[in-house]
Amino acid sequence: MTETEIKKGLAGVVVDYTAVSKVNPDTNSLLYRGYPVQDLAASKSFEEVALLLWNGELPTQVELTEFIAAERAGRTLDTRVKAAIDLLPLDCHPMDVGRTAVSVIGANHALANDSSREAELVKAKELFAAFPAVVAYDQRRRRGLGVVEPREDLDYSQNFLWMTFGEEAAPAVVDAFRVSMVLYAEHSFNASTFTARVITSTLS
Image 1 (spheres, rainbow, N blue to C red):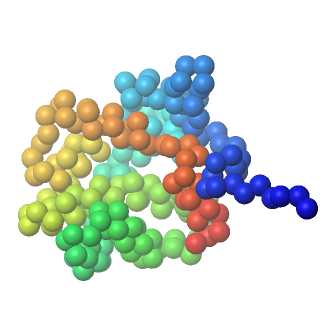
Image 2: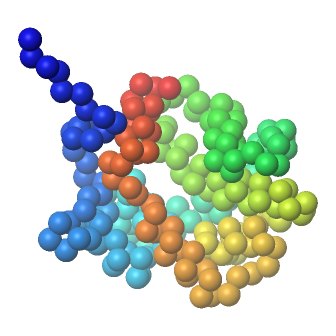
């Protein structure tokens, strides 16, 4: 009788190929769509990197301008999302808040029942715009502070820090936050990404 080899977790399991990101073993560098992440972090906005990951190439100036305008127009948090967050205990994990908010946003979306690539990209971009407000809203309610509404004159990083702390952050702080988001934007095929792919591929 041949003994079956059991793979523990994802150790040694090859599930797919991805063009989104990979580690270059020659330089020990993380690549997003072929671009070294350190180069992106040094010169690109988080909005540009998001479009790169979605579309496979860095955006043109026209594409970036259109995306920024749509993102800034979609920053205000829906009252139903705020109401759902308010029902959660103040000591629950922030990830539980984020998960709940995403469920409410998704369930109420006009394209909720459309799982085409085009519809999912629309939802992803709208979630990209709204999620900073989710995090900021939760952080402020935990501290007993009032809501700080988004501003369309601030970029993505500036606006998040504004909504969270109620004041404009210093340029060095804004840039450090931008760099951090770029570096954490894509994780290739680690465990959490694999889990997300399993969930989405089964249309959960």
